[in-house]
Image (cartoon, rainbow, N blue to C red; front, side, top):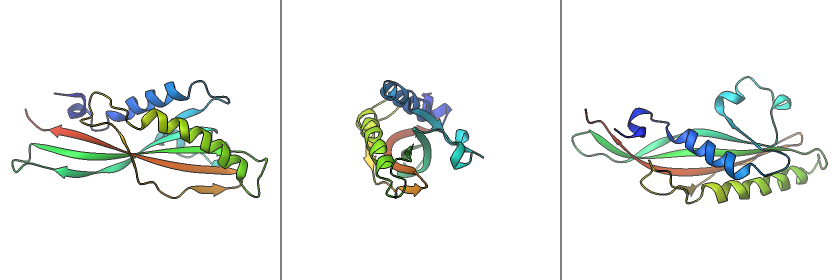
Length: 152
């Protein structure tokens, strides 16, 4: 049994570790947060700069007729969250901050292949960024191909 067979979301801590290592030298320090870290936190209380690592679902790409295995593609979203009030009206400073962090996230995850993946991570189609009172949210999506087995 591989790690994925024991835990469907086994990729999450591997991605978080990779991000933490690759962002460790940035100043100010960039926190790597998960969905649970964001629950009930108002926007004004959230940590910035940060990257939010969020599971966005999966799709099945192949399943044999016996149903005991499947190849799936999980989507992981890394949202770069910044706040910079220097250019509050235009949001330019927050976007610039996010762009620098986003480039580091891309370097960390594009082509990254932890042992449980059958292929390296790929950049996937993203979703729209968000703006709010000096905050900027830049989502980057990654696709991970995994093989599941259900053998006893």
